[in-house]
Length: 470
Image 1 (cartoon, rainbow, N blue to C red):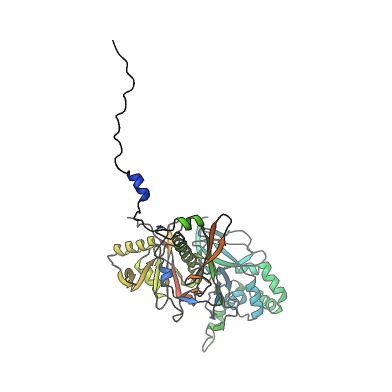
Image 2: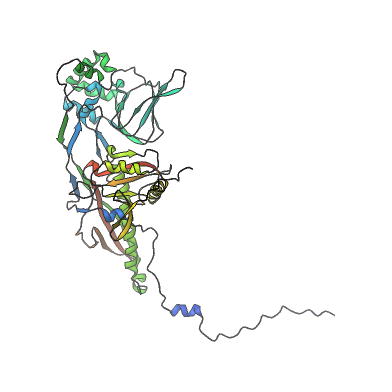
């Protein structure tokens, strides 16, 4: 006979004879760290830039406007993200060679329209109407035409200071005889035939000059001006040399201080009851300031108005020979300026530099910078800056800079002595307590950067940071 029994009773638990650890933890004072933050970087750029006071909230950079007439290249002026052609440089066009009416040239320059293009973009199509001239401020453009057997063949490369489409200003029936494709990203200015005609209608001297050019068809076909040089070749004596016209900039660049701000909010209950052993407000403020400084460095690199990357002069931008950052490329970058003080690169770009050194059996120097040993090339420290962007194509840029006002270099701009200043150039203002018992603080920092002369900053562009293919 089977006797069914109920479920087995659980074993009896022994009575608790001491305080549990869970309960004890409520009364214990633990050893704890201050709040940590992954966003914090070394911020070498902020540390190495010499900071100059901008008491009026702005800093004016007075320069001489220098350009060379007769060298065949058109020169431009950069004002933040805006690019303008130097009016007298329009004399490099065969159509305007020898024309010296400054007011008319300024009117033409004012009608030029800026266009930024990207790598691979088709700028003009072969066989379409040619209605405007293109002046290349920065970038590399290839022109291809139809070959003898129907395939596209390269016919020309246009780069910084070049131009194409001059015939569009004279011939209303002109068509493009080649396709222009951007090989790199860049900037150009365009001038339409309609705008040129509008200026010509109000400038009798320009109209007379153009009519004279129309009567000499061989000059229209020579966009490089060889016809004029050919006439000089038959003369005896010393030919006329290209001249340099130097003038002060009538509208010098002014850098206004930018601002990064945020409102820090702390509940009074937190500030009153949970302020030990660490001051909650101070810790919140510390992390907020760290985030603002990170943003400040990002803006100093990337802001279109004053950032170092967008505002580097076009003539100070170079391309890597092979795409990879080789020692030869770094030498080219250093050779373009005197007294280079620092090289800045994304950490991944620095790793790529190291791989190229290793592939050649080279070992970079190391220099002491503020008690820290950092890699260097030719004695110039190579410092990491994670704010330098990496493109979708896995390319980045390397910056070389000379710093300091006395060296006509790159400087940082700020203003100290602010009301309720917490750190130099950074203020923390009490904004009051809301009806929800929340304390608010306005945290502000003011900053900018200025490139005193164009060769103070150079950029090695489109550097491949991927591993070398074996």
